[in-house]
Amino acid sequence: MSDQPRRPAKAGKPYRRPQKDPVRILAFEALRAVDERDAYANLVLPPLLRKAREKGSFETRDAALATELVYGTLRRQGTYDAIIAECVDRPLREVDPPVLDVLSLGAHQLLGTRIPTHAAVSASVELARVVLGDGRAKFVNAVLRKVAQHDLDGWVAKVAPPYEDDPEDHLAVVHSHPRWVVSALWDSLGGGRAGIERLLEADNERPEVTLVARPGRSTAEELLREESAVAGRWSPYAVRLSEGGEPGAVDAVREGRAGVQDEGSQLVALALANVPVEGRDEKWLDGCAGPGGKAALLAALAAERGAMLLASEKQPHRAGLVAKALAGNPGPYQVIAADGTRPPWQPGSFDRVLMDVPCTGLGALRRRPEARWRRRPEDLEGFGPLQRGLLSTALDSVRVGGVVGYATCSPHLAETRAVVDDVLKQWPSAELVDARPLFPGVPELGEGPDVQLWPHVHGTDAMYLAVIRRTG
Image (tube, rainbow, N blue to C red):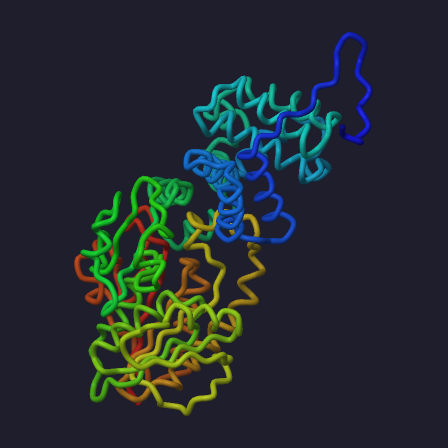
């Protein structure tokens, strides 16, 4: 018999224990980790799902629902916050974060899924009873009943300012992005309303899982034999897993012969590998190699040509991830933990250098939706000097006649063209190379000489690449 005290029951209404729903409890735990520990959902969720499967409490459809609840809630957080704010009697900052997480999960079920209204409300209230207690569950019930009075379009019409009055704020609420991010993306994209709306919509779509077949160890043909696998759009090494395919179930991925890598990331590595260089082509450098996706592809491409790759990563634990990604590469390579702004190698040591610099990550908001709420405009001030320093190091590290690829997973102009322009002013013996021919078959690459990929145009993360040749 349980030694837990029974809660007092109201006359005529016996106390009922809350029903534990493993799917929604897991989704709540993931959201709490994102909020409390600044964790990323794509790192938190897989171990939670694995643990649930090991307990035998999860089926495939349960994992799919939990994943949708977590990512859908994070992507639409800004819109849901605006809606919930209309339904509570206090500023949102005065609502306890765990309560707000339950409300947001409930709002997503009501407004962003096909779950029936009654089921969405009752499941959210039961979750609140389990994780918050009966008192706050009543508050959740009252708020979600108000949320249920309109569908998403009805709420958006109610809480978003008219486009004509404030275009950026309208788009921020409708498409669930911070206003400053909307402004930055619009500046980078240029053009009118249609393009920015398509981009913001693409940021809120669930991205397909894309695999890379590492040359010399696997092939796209092998990966295409997997169920739900289809060929990539642009990279000859890319294979997409449609219908929620699980990478961990693919033999080549488990064995390290293939990996998970966005097609835009693959294209950047391929572009650097295919730039013509004058003279020898024996030593390549990935100067910001963590966590290892581009390094693994570059090392395999280098091996095909008899070249070697040095993969350098400042953070030792990330250098460990690089070493794991490169293990089994068919040719010579080396992984080191080193600061790219104070390199241990001699100037002019390399024929090709990739610097995929740390950045705000605004180009990967499909995969890391929480990043849009975590980043601040002032973050650019912190990244700017580092990005310029790393590009300068790259130019110093490459020999005359060799090439540097400056890459970011951000389309923000302060992290792309502004960095390249500033550094080139200090390097008269370097010149931009037209990178567009290095992306064969890929349309709408802009006016050049640099290349900006886009989720809504190319189906990739918003990767940026500038290719620079050292001339003296």
